[in-house]
Image (tube, rainbow, N blue to C red; front, top):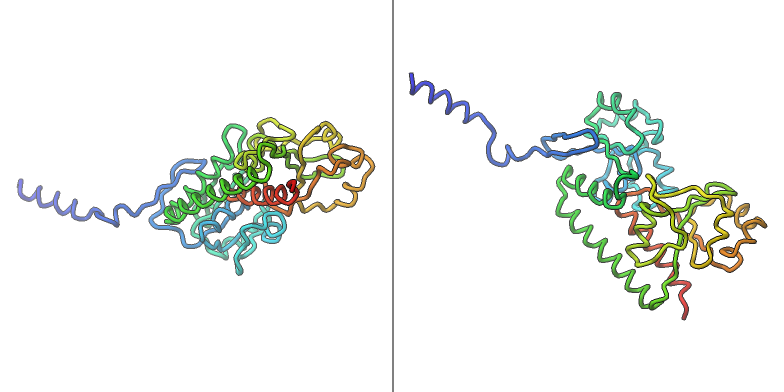
Length: 306
């Protein structure tokens, strides 16, 4: 009897997975808790641009991205690879198209929680809280990138890419220090929200993270907020006594804004302290900090005293 019990126990243990197969499960924590994947998902879909950016930066080509045309206009870098399907708008996904693409995992960001019940009928869903007044957005972007690298089995590549980013930022800071010495200009970054208002980026924003990495102080400090900006009347920019203001494109009403008497009466404009930057996403992942820093540093080096 005793030998029979031992035999049954041995047979039960023999049936348990061991070695590499047992360790293959990938555990991911998102906004809603822990999730387990038997293997890296092969077909990923990103319904927010920040996560699409991070997936592409991992060298993973998504099968679908929300509003590809909008991404190409506003985010720009990294480019969406050829052949990636459009899955509707970020706020109104095309559920039928998403199902047709047969994703293995669907990635959601802020303000997309309402889509989870319907999307979970199609594939596992991971939602990340990327932007919050209660956390450091830039640091969260970095952690999210590493989490995604674990999901796709690309942790070594991600660590190397982050090291390259840090090296690039340090190099740009060194170039600015060499060009300006101790007199690097203060800088503020804005987007025009219309002809009479701007989104001023401040604490907890990606533009401010880029400025900090470059060793640059803000010309127009703003308080901490969820998305890192505060909407201000254009007239308040009249109080920016020193430093440079960069506005990020695309600016659809550029002629209307930049040629208005109100705008041209302000010192930041009349003194030539306003400069445009090419489109870059200010609500992106960790690498958006690098793209912002490149544009800011490039323009500052262009206007540096000779």
